[in-house]
Image (cartoon, rainbow, N blue to C red; front, top):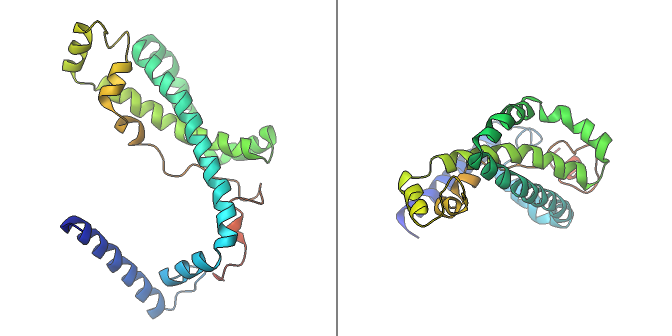
Length: 204
């Protein structure tokens, strides 16, 4: 382990130690803030209960991310290639983020039902906008020398932006992708992580 890795591990251990000690010294109720040792113990002993729900939630997140990529990447490329399209669609993209996500959750359950579709669509709403905006900004920030190179090779970047995507790599797509994709299904399911914590796992 190099020095940076050792420092990171030491910092994590220090934070966990302070957390554990503070909870026990001040006798914080476990349902407010459980100590790390209890969290680890519950994760091990309740694994047969947690894993099935985690797999369902993980599948919903993966499907939401894939759907967001399948729609956001082509849209960002099209908006980059056609500035008129960007000007036409930008107000709708901004407006889509002005609506609170939790206000849409009940509507999605009514429209799409209690199954996986409403959760995947919710994940898509959360993930789609950051990917579109990040990729579009990344394409716009492409080094002018790349644009000259593509033009000399017979592939102008504004007519065929796919070489620019290869030059940029995945960073513009994933640097602002939200880490959490599934929200608001606590009351609309019985096999997801939103429901599983409501059981008695020793935190009460």
